Length: 351
View 1: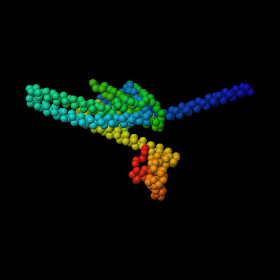
View 2: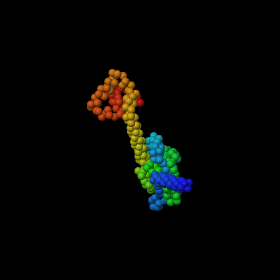
View 3: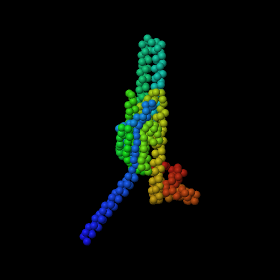
View 4: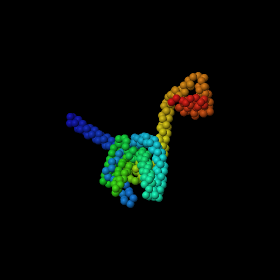
């Protein structure tokens, strides 16, 4: 009997162990199903010099929502300074053009009287003034362009979810939770002769429903490439100064300023829609909240026979038959109170 009980207990122990292993295996399989394998490579293709694989590049993996909010904040903060210094740069450019005309005229006079020391001094003064104007213009351009540079956006990043580095072939690999969106951020540089080339990427990655994902960080999605994949679009202070000094205008910078303004406006619109949706949900759950809010905005509503009270009741009765859909919205008391106040030209509602 004792031997039989021992055998049964051993069998139960084995079955229990097998059950636990089965549960653990199922959990492990489920965990494996919940991740996305991301593989990629960082490289740059140059004109006539082939492709360069960039090794030892640190890549930060960020939550899309968190980093996007950070970038939006920085765009908004940079906009006033960018607009101000761009306007000043246009004024400075006019001064540069005028100073150059004076310099050219003084040089022409000096050539006609090349032994005249006074004419020479006037030419040298005009030349110095033109040089000073150009340096002022260069400085203002740099300040105007800083808010459009990768350096500006990379200067204040939130902590990444993880980081990885490229190997000798520029390749990288990591795993992230599936059904989520991320941004890969990386900066790199390469020496070409006596020049140093700098590269920056902030590329969006959607891991939704995918077991594996291949990402290339290359010329196509650089922050300066105007790619749909990129979370930022940059020009950069040095590039802006160089192109302007070579005779190009500020079209690129002005385009980014307008883009940032549109993005700010779209963000404000989204936030207003979200706020309104939350208010509607609140009023839908408790209709009395909308009534109380209307009275907070227009205290005269609570006074019987006041002009606003009478207009409110009159419209309410009329809308019951003429515009019943108006009264179906949970915030109708607030909207109706505002309509009545506008009709009576009452002071603006208190916020």
